[in-house]
Each structure stands twice: as structure tokens, then as C-alpha cells.
Image 1 (cartoon, one colour):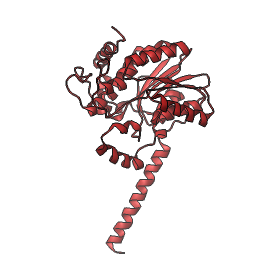
Image 2 (cartoon, one colour):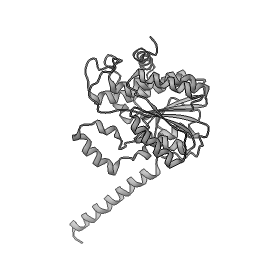
Image 3 (cartoon, one colour):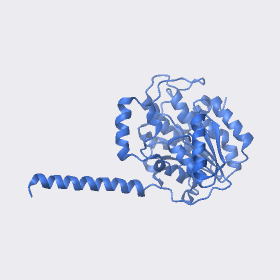
Image 4 (cartoon, helix red, strand yellow):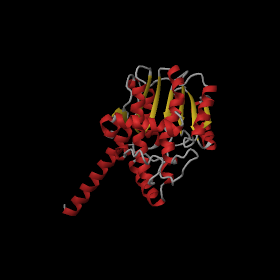
Amino acid sequence: MDPVTLWCIGFTVTLLLFIVAIIYVRLNFGRCLSKADLSGKTAIVTGANTGIGYYTALDFATRNARVILACRNIQKAVEAQNRIIEETDNEEIIVKELDLSSMKSVRNFVREILDEEPELHILVNNAGVLGMPKIITEDGLESMFATNHFGPFLLTNLLLDLLKYSAPSRIVNVSSVVNTMGRIEFDNLRAEKYFNYHRIYFDSKLANIIFTRELARRLEGSDVLVNCLHPGTIQTELLRNLPAIFRLPITLIGKFFFKNCDEGAQTSIYCAVSEEVEGISGKYFVDCALADDAANKISQDPGIAKKLWEISEKYTGLVP
């Protein structure tokens, strides 16, 4: 057999093995295997009309939870509500308007929840944005950082008493592997000095982890757990705001190598329901497994955590 034929055969076999390996990893790693039933439990999932938020809410509905879809786009949320009800026969799927970039919207949402819901057992801070142009909100905040950090910070704190009352309860914050490229620039959290949407996204995902760790410290002694996670590299609608020059190649590559949204939701579900997470708080998870060492080391700095918490209180109006 000539060398060219041997090379072609070797290349083909290697490629096939590579493809099989990818499929095997996607199908067998990082799935939530818990059979936990959520009957009698209430869960809030932000950004639940699409992507991993939708599949997180769908899973909770399958487990018989009362699920509140907290979404900015009500029309899409109602469409998601109808699909979930049709698929699960669970009629306890509620739609509420929530724009995390607006602190007024967050407060209005919380007011409705406290008026209507006697208990809350799961809060999944899933919603996030990427690739947005510079927009300064009515609160004087940069909209991406507001949506990804300040809004969830305020939302969680305003719901803490209800979560404590309903304990055992869990808070799940969806971060990203790009937290490792983040840094916290306290003099630019509102894009006062410059604007770069990559930098803001990286920093906001690091802020999610810092917030998780500090909140866990403050909740010590309670029966409220809070953890954060990287969902994996996923094809989601987060890409919709990227320039076309980036969006098209990423979409094409993602068809073969990225997780789908159901796979991407698994670690959120795991942190929210799995028995294996009992007693674990303030940690970072990847593929349904503890991965604390993989998070940005900045997230372990108590001084940065304290300062970010205090600034977040000020910017959101939690503390005047």
C-alpha cells in the first residue's frame, strides 16, 4: 500500500475516533442524574424564555415544581410557558416580567413575588447578555454589567427573607469560564472610563462568582445554599448580539463542538436539585462536578468581595 493511501486511511480513522470521542463526551459527561421530585416547591428562573434558562425551567416543570419564568420579553415568555405546559402537563408555569438592567423592574418583580408567593425554594439567576453596545440605564449603570451582576445582586438580596423562610432552599448563579479572564475595575463598573463589551462580560462573570462566595459567607448557619457554575460552551441566543463577523463562524463551529441548550442546562439543574450538593455552598461547578480550583483566583479575595458587595449595595440602591 502506497504512503499516500496509508496517510489517508490514518487520517480518516483519526478523524472518526475524534468525532466518536466528542459524541461520547457530550452524551455521557456533565448530566444531572438526580431523580429529585419538586412537588410543592416553587422555583424562579430568570431568562427562562430561551436557551439554557428554558431547559432549566422545563426540567423543573417535569419534576412537578411551580415555575416562574422571569423574562424581559413577555411575548417570548408566554410562548415558552405554552410549550412547557404542553410538554409536561404542568399547569403551574407562571410568567412574570423582569428586566434585570432596571432596578425599578427588579423591585416591581420582587413586590409581585412577595405578594403572591408564600414560599420560594429555588432561584436560578440565569439571564445574561453579551455583545451589547454601550447603554447607560436610568439608574446610571452600564446595561450589560447591570443585567449580568447588579440586577441579580439586587434580586437575590430582596428575595433572601423568603428563601430563608422557605428553607431548605438554593440559589444558583450562572457564570462562565471567561471569569478567568475577568478583573474587577472598581472605577469602571459603570463604564465611566472606557467601554469594551468583551471586558465587561468577562468582569461581570467574575463578579457572579465573587458574589456567590460572599453571599455564602453571609448565609452561613442558614439552610440556604448558593453556588455558581460554568454551563459549558453552548450555542445560545447570547450570540445574537455579537457582530456578524464573529457570530457566523462561531455558529458553524458550534454545530459540531458546542453543547446544545439542554446539555448546557444540566449543571444549573444539578446545583438546584441534586442530593450531592447538600451542605455545599459558595462553590464553582463545571459539568455537574465541583471545580473550585478552575475559577479565577481573584474570586477568593475577601477584600475584593467586601468592596464589590458594598459598591453593589450603593449602585442598586439596596443601601442608600
